[in-house]
Amino acid sequence: MDLRAASAQGPSSSPWGASRAEKLPLFDSYSQTLYKELFTDWDEVHMAAEQYFIILHNGEWKISFKDRHYGPFATQAEAIEAAVDAAYAQGEIGIDAQVLVEEANHQLRTEWAYGQDFNTFR
Image (cartoon, rainbow, N blue to C red):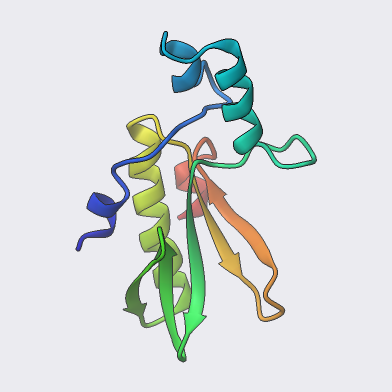
């Protein structure tokens, strides 16, 4: 299955404009508040609706997205590039996405998030 095709669905919230929840009349104010709380961490930092995790799995670099692994990739950089491409495509259709890399100590760092300059990553 293609990574971009697998990521073509999901909720969205955007710090660059009204979220989809705010635009839909089906969401009352309670639902909008709940929706925003789901996609905001405790420090009030926006969390993307879709997250791509770069992981080293069984000695191979892979992308973990929606409980599935994609790859393997020859290098971590290749996995990151593929994930950024997919996350960028998500952002272009209004779904916030970010790429996170799992470090050796199992902590996550954000490598790229939609809204950052796509060309600075390259």
